[in-house]
Length: 203
Image (tube, rainbow, N blue to C red):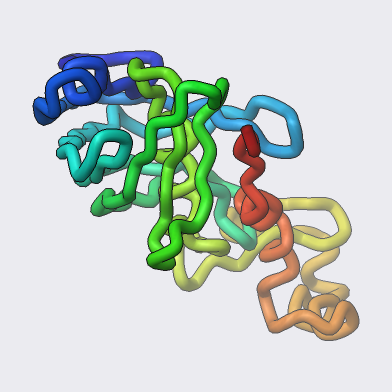
């Protein structure tokens, strides 16, 4: 597998039949995953290269290792501008083949390690890569450490200059009234704050 692809897949038929190693690589401009029974899309600022190798451990178990380098597009926690966040992820998980499984799902193995259970030898790695990415993503980012945020009254970007409200009610005072750290009134709006319970199919 090489070049741009819609889904990161690795073909494990030969590995299951003869114990041969398997390899896949390519680039992704997005990932689709399931959250709360609904399909979501994770966008990347540029093509994200991935490379995976799978080696046989026993008849039905194997080990996946590799790398994934997505550049996420997040929102600044204060002014909501887009921020590019590059990640360099090392991949590693146990795999178990169970032909009765319709959709891949993650569980904890007896050893405590993460285990990806799958039933289709043409394994779609979208859910696994999405969860790995979301767990590594920061919950809050700033486009600039000195970001002044938005006016709490009219929504004006204070980085572009003051508005009529900023002279009357400083942003810091409004933040204090909300009981939030100074300048962080928008931290609760980070796009990944609600994705920590990534919902992968149970079976």
